[in-house]
Amino acid sequence: MFPSLALGFLVAGITAVAAASSSSCVGKISSLDTLAVLSNARRSILIAFTALVEKQFELQLLDGTTVNVLGEIQFGNLSWAGPLFRVIGNDVTFNGNNQRWDGGGPFYWDGQGAGITTPHPMMQISISGTLNNVYVVNSPSSAFAITNPGPLTISGATVDDLQGNYPNSRSGNATAAHNTDGFDVSGSDILIQHLHLRGFSTVLNQDDCLAINSGTNITFADNYCEYGHGISIGSISSNAVVSDIKIIGNHVVSSAFSFRIKTDASATNSIVKNVTYSDNTATNCTGFGVLITQVRVISVCFLSVLRGRGFHGLSQDINFNHGTTSVTANRGAYRVAVNCGSGSCTGDWDWSGLQTSGGKAGSIVNNNLIAGFVDTR
Ligand SMILES: *[C@@H]1O[C@H](CO)[C@@H](O)[C@H](O)[C@H]1NC(C)=O
Ligand SMILES: *[C@@H]1O[C@H](CO)[C@@H](O)[C@H](O)[C@H]1NC(C)=O
Ligand SMILES: *[C@@H]1O[C@H](CO)[C@@H](O)[C@H](O)[C@H]1NC(C)=O
Ligand SMILES: *[C@@H]1O[C@H](CO)[C@@H](O)[C@H](O)[C@H]1NC(C)=O
Ligand SMILES: *[C@@H]1O[C@H](CO)[C@@H](O)[C@H](O)[C@H]1NC(C)=O
Image (cartoon, rainbow, N blue to C red; front, side):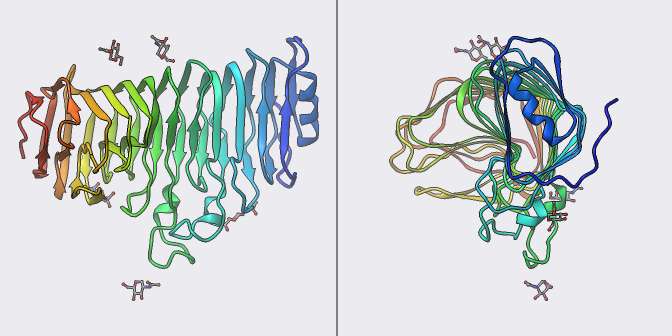
């Protein structure tokens, strides 16, 4: 075990560039001062300190580097755009070892996200390879943004923003945190599994557990999402493609939405296709979301496919099959609502694996493709 240094360092921002050598020896960062060692390039890096990083912590890694985090990281309370942490590299193995990364959320949270410039995202992941057991608490805004240069597997991450669920001195009676998405994904060939995310559930806030904004071949498996906006595809803006998505074996608990696909009303030339939901469970879906398009306002518990005037994209082959997905809606919440533009939902919609209970029925508009689904209370 490596000694941890006491909290108390304050550094204006750290960039460690590992670029020059092919050495395979281990670089151990035992204090912020020794981060400079990284400039000599190491393929194995131990971050062995407990640190307070004032501004940005960036790791630019050699191909094939392994990083092990052995101390807790805390960020200074500064109003700036972020991200607080960025890691860049190919074929990286990043082991967070469940050491806490504390984003200092309470400093920024004011119930509206409008007060001061807030770092966003907290963790910018721009690697291929694997990212394991990274533990984030109190993200100022969204926790992870994924923009990977090649295949990436993310396992066992935790995002705990539960504290943001309560009011603080600046939020009046409102939930303090705002915009604390768990994972924002814009990339392809991604497997995200065994996450544990606890957000909060105020409808005014945008806090998806997972939000896929673009990309192909993305699997979200065996994750746990509590108090938030559930698993979301979108918002999809213009010229975006989301395809070949699998949502498997997830638990969505006490969330405003569970599974959602949403497009911007003004989006053109976009498509969401080949999305498969299997073996998921959603319980205590509170479904108080009011989503506004230029066409109509709907409330959604389970799934919405929204189309605004001017939307020229498509939703194609959205399936609930290959295993039962069950949804239990709270009293007053809608079970299922689908709202397609005229002709903008196409393909096969096999919903034979979807079981619903509780709540009330939503409307299904411009979609007679859905097969095998019986909406039961
Ligand atoms: C940042 O602010 C929060 C809440 O205002 C406080 O709990 C925390 O100790 C502060 N962190 C630092 C590093 O000063
Ligand atoms: C908070 O809620 C209480 C009780 O509903 C109310 O009396 C008070 O005015 C509210 N405060 C703010 C700042 O909205
Ligand atoms: C899909 O993504 C996974 C996870 O990164 C990867 O292992 C797999 O090779 C990809 N499939 C294709 C066809 O590229
Ligand atoms: C749909 O996506 C899955 C991966 O999720 C892929 O294996 C399959 O080939 C895709 N189907 C089509 C028709 O592209
Ligand atoms: C249902 O979810 C709401 C909102 O997240 C939460 O306040 C409530 O405690 C949950 N109820 C149960 C029984 O879990």
